[in-house]
Image (cartoon, helix red, strand yellow):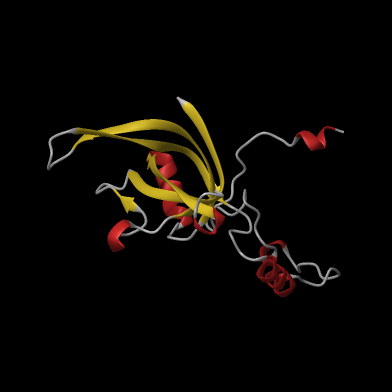
Amino acid sequence: MLKVFATQVVVSKGYDNTPALRFSENGDSVRFRIGKKVYDPHAENDSRWINLPVKAFNGVCERIKKMQLKEGSFVNLIGRLDEDSWEDKDTKETRKMMVIILDDIEYASGGGKSKENQAAAGQQNAAPQNTAPQNAASAPATGAEASGNFTGYEAFGGGSFFDEN
């Protein structure tokens, strides 16, 4: 298997007005597509979109439900490149397509917002530095503490090699 790392990709809209995320009947799997705009000097406006199908199962599927992903969500993901095969209903031919089997997913920071919008949001959310919460109940929960307030962020694991000093 080939390992896939994708950063700052967007959940693509569904084909022919179908939902962007398609969960199985029993809810233990989900299918969706991700897209990334890439530079291509031969394409119109020097760019084109790459779209890839993604499948997630069991625990990762549950995580996606908690994240409430939708069309246009920017994410980072880790997965395995695999090949899907099926028989075409009309032609009875075996068809094949590459697919990413998802191992981990998180929201991408900054998710495609312009720098002006990010700066404006940062100024609106900035609190005065000399204020402190009155008690622990009023303090914002961190990712580890926020089991009921899932933020969609969990580190992929491992520490930063920059912190080794």
